[in-house]
Length: 246
Image (cartoon, rainbow, N blue to C red):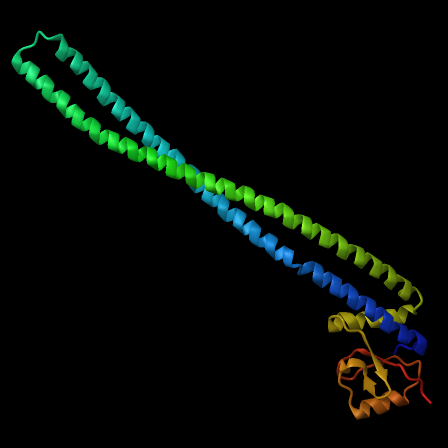
């Protein structure tokens, strides 16, 4: 059983205050609202990158289709031009002239169909390029917002880290004035409970009613020596008497 002067036991309450503040700072650092916003932004960036990849592939595909359409139209136009030159040169029989004119007319119809396909291919290129440009603009917007959120996060981290450093310095000063066995007992309790190491007992009332204490346990506490470090029977935390025994 650990024993310590009641004055030292009461200083554990100062240590608890600092440790609770450190826990609060650590929790706030882990749960800053800006952190979830940054995470959402990272997810948005990943989704937008996938959108850009698909859009870039669509642009490439549309351009290949447009190039083939241009080539098809150019071949028909060139072929029709050659045939017209032959037609204008003359020296052909009426039958050959008729056949030549028929082929030229057929090429004209074919050119009309190909030019429609060419126009559709050009529109597809424009649409795909627009999708890619929108995705690229969205990426810039996301990255700009990311820089702003990162700056906010870093400022919050700096503020909280400075507060934690100050609190740890305060804790070190308190611990330096306490018996090592008492501090070890307190730290062990805090680790077991997840944060609460000590509570104050004023007369027959636990401050803020943090833990339950039965009348029988209160009687036992009142009868204990002042230097006896008392652990709650139910909650296991250290109970520090703030009123001196008569």
